[in-house]
Length: 302
Image 1 (tube, helix red, strand yellow):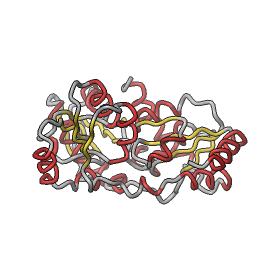
Image 2 (image 1 turned 90 degrees about the horizontal axis):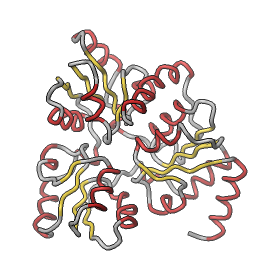
Image 3 (image 1 turned 90 degrees about the vertical axis):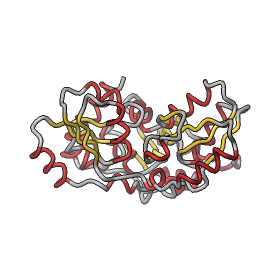
Image 4 (image 1 turned 45 degrees about the horizontal axis):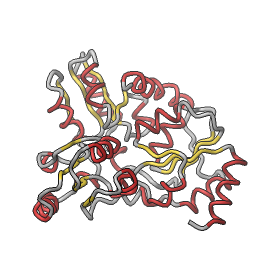
């Protein structure tokens, strides 16, 4: 990173009283200059505690919305407003209403990878790091888990005391892995353990030695005695894995790249702080409704 770029960025941060949050999946150049790096749950938790006037979110649109909902009086800037999550749009109001009409004893559990409008229709939000704990502790027997079907099926298998109904949404990056790619890596690196994200489909998860969130995968790689790992999640996680585990070897599935996450760049962070053109705006009526399941997640996911 050029010194002049860092100087300009720091001046803008000071002027705007800004803090930069980055998801593990953005490019390493952003993770290097970010004030905080984490998964969706960590960043949501953190955002509600920050005192800065301006929060810059290097990730995708739903992340900026979630932070704005939790911090309605702060200036929340995305790095690139076109960076979106296809899965966030794979559920409709009509489908939620139909499920509520079908089941009396129903909780709509909304993965944080969703739009503000959908969060506002839900009972509680979850992330991949706390979904099992929260679903297990809900009073309701029937759980409509939206929008990710793969995570829903993983939760259903793990929490068999609940009737988990899966939506048909999915993350294209995690869902479209060819299982043969993973088998080839396992054949090439037979001593390596497979660490997989639960957004992967069941064929991938059945070959995993560990299933967990991005934060969980990093923690497992750091603490496990194994020196070699195959990582089944977005390749941006490599920055933190290599930083936390410099003496271990990691192998990645080449196709696992989220092009929306890669729309983020340091130059766009500078542009966002200068122009404020990427400010996140969420209608107050949606903020009031969506804040309830998000705050419930923060409480239940501790």
